[in-house]
Amino acid sequence: MIQVTTLAKLPQAYKVLFTGFLMVIGVGLMMAGAQIMLTHGMADGKPGLSLNDIVYSYHGNRSGSKLESMLNGQMKAMAPDEVRFAIIQWARDEAPADEWNSKIQPLFQKHCLSCHNAESGLPNFTELADVKKVAAVDEGASIGSLTRVSHIHLFGIAFIFLFVGWIFGLAEFPLKWKLVLISTPFAFLVIDVLSWWLTKYHPVFAWLTMLGGIGYSIASTIMIFTSFAQMWAPRSLWPTMWTGVPSEAPQEATKEA
Image (cartoon, rainbow, N blue to C red; front, side):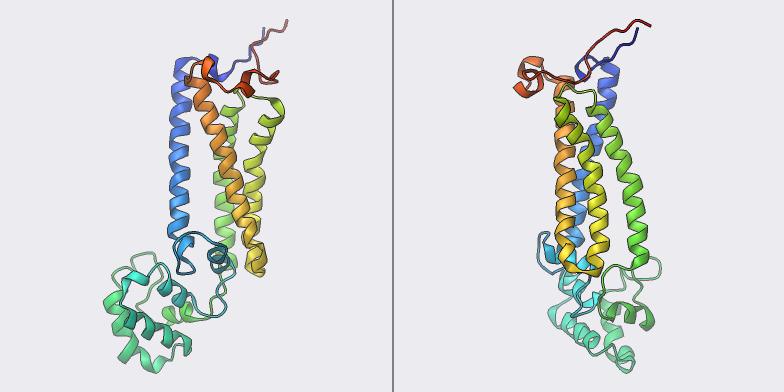
């Protein structure tokens, strides 16, 4: 005899286990959104995530340097305007070495080196050679960094979607829409990562990054909240589409061996 259960019929121990996992994943997704806002969201110097932020992050701001972009964006509050303008002008003048010791290095020592030092893991601004790398024209993310971030996202986030989809697979839900929701995060994750590479070479593809993030966020949110509801909410409160439409979701069934 083979029995297939649903979320509502799970033992309490599994409901608690799945609930704990989904709660942590939900908070993690919100933290990921906040991290994007705090990093990519200020790439153009303005609050909020925009297409320009994505273009500057992956394609680069070819009219200036990464140093200039950071000083006008995330790091704007870290130094007075006159200091930022002096450093930006130095970078635009191709970072002449003869101005480093007398004019520019003291500014970095006062305003930057508390974070940007050899021990911090951030770009090291103690030496002229390292500063010149970020003072060059901003060509966006490097191939090496894109490769590293791509494989981390594809491997790591795919496992999150696997377990979220597996739990949601036990929900009572119209089969067609269940299959759409389970597959959507994987499809949009691939679109998201692919868009980084495409945007690196042409900024017109930046909108794909927006599409990918929005797509898998919406699908994941629906699956997580549906799973919560079917594990803990009374059946009488469920939306009609879950139970009013003939469902192809797994039902308790028996089959002779």
